[in-house]
Length: 622
Ligand SMILES: Nc1ncnc2c1ncn2[C@@H]1O[C@H](COP(=O)(O)OP(=O)(O)O)[C@@H](O)[C@H]1O
Ligand SMILES: [Mg+2]
Image (cartoon, rainbow, N blue to C red):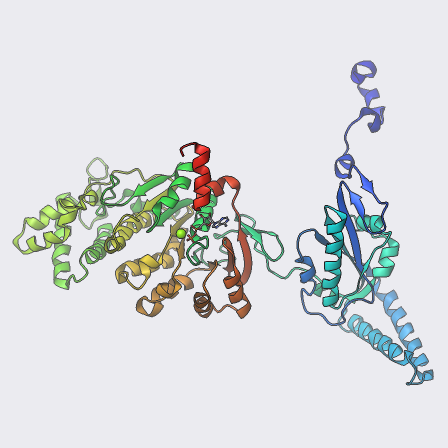
């Protein structure tokens, strides 16, 4: 309207107020303030009360981060510091004068008089300040501390104020109520550097640069990596914990492990990490040796691929397959293909595979198998030359399967007995594993469920799954990827197979070179550290820069303390941890974190019986 009536130029002359336009101040300012009480002001319905630390009310000797108990006292408590730097020369000459004056007065004062002590300490304070400023070239500041306490009602507020005053006096600090001055304190604690002069006068304390630095209230109990993923809240100070496992400046490798007793929240944490990494575009593999179904919902929700490796499954990964992409690992960075023989590498892996099928396999049998495998590949036209993997037209050749190997073994008298070893894969109960790969593996979220394999077949299933994952992981050195291994104790614990355990450890050692990370979760710490004197458990821990320790039983916590050199306090923290709480050790930083998930993610991940029951009711399938 105004534009039509007055034209553009005139419109600008109208005061902003008339136009009814909302200004930034309108948005920032509270809509109501009630300052009618001695004890508090009410801003937008929230009760605010203020304390200040009296100028004389500080301790004289303090260690670093001595104010952190106040900062970490909890929600609804805020602290604002104001520091005013004073001109060096003026202050120095004033201190000198004052100290001189005090010294001359001191001569007249009898040492039995009460103010003798006061004068004496004033003089030594003067010397201390002069010394710091002159010799160490420190600056002189006035510091004032105002504490803000908020609550929803007056009663709650009063309780909190008393708590904070008690806390302060336990730290030998004198906190005073800012009676009738709460409004001024409210304004003083806004980040506008405008402390009320009366409050400043009462709360003022002189400090030198050293002491100022020590009053920085945060010790390094923080994890906040700028490109990381959200983990939850820091329990010390409720700050947000964000971890970037791939920040190689901070963490020399991206591997991690999650320790905790059953039900402590390992799988929950693992899947939260996996989902958040996936959202950032990281390739995720999850290997589930038990309770694989726990991973299904999340996998389907993000459009992932869920593979069941089980005798009854239709999904098949051909253990003999050489994958085309393994040829090009370095292609992205060096633009040439690898020159070591891929078949030789495959042979090594197949030998582990045979040892897993037959625990007491002899060297002679392995030699015979070696020859048979090579002949089988030869039949498909594949030799130790990498070029032989392609046919004349540049197509990748078909791959032999365990069935082809079985036929080869049968065809020669001396290898016939060996055919028995793999018979069940070719024609028997495990023939699901003997065919060609029939699953599409190009997905950024792949879960490999081997939980249906019986105990003695588990290392085998694990090996097949890991072999595939490892191959995929090696396809690129640039694409970020994480391999998650749940319930790792089943794979490297006392009852498992050394070759399989070696293979896992190898992954932890080498994956960094392929731009990846391995993350393991385990319970049963005793078992985890038992095979070969704990070689594998220790190996995994030592190759993990990042460790989450959830709740543990006392004896397990003390075992972990030994392996990870935790302090007594940290060990007690682990024992006290509730479900979903973890001590995170990332490099030398140790932080206690409450792992958090959004309600949606929680509903997908939870396995609590009560939650499942609710879900069933909502779905209406009671
Ligand atoms: N951070 C968490 N926040 C909320 N609930 C959790 C959290 N961690 C675990 N839980 C609950 O505890 C249950 C058991 O956790 P889970 O991860 O399966 O334990 P674990 O794998 O250590 O045996 C989960 O299904 C979930 O309901
Ligand atoms: Mg679990």
